[in-house]
Length: 132
Image (tube, helix red, strand yellow):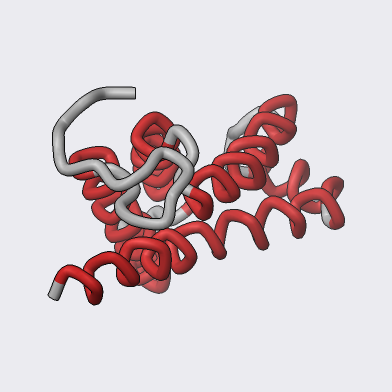
């Protein structure tokens, strides 16, 4: 069972990080469109470089397990805030699944925050609750 758990950690980090790494790149290539969309939702486009940095560098950090607890905590906040800003299911019912996706990802990141990045990570497997 330990071997299965060891391999599950990097696969889980890969799955959680992919959406942010790809999204960060797409925000760069579609910068003007993304900035316009943010503004239309009441979010200053001035924040876009920070969003891109978090998605790209944070996604890579989660992928390799570097400062994973800290980055995971940042992603918890990012996912919850963006769920409420961009996926307002109480206004548009079709936004329920994207809203819940963000909340589910926040849950996954909470697990990384709680238990660390696991095996095959820069931070190394962590079975204690040391904070980074």
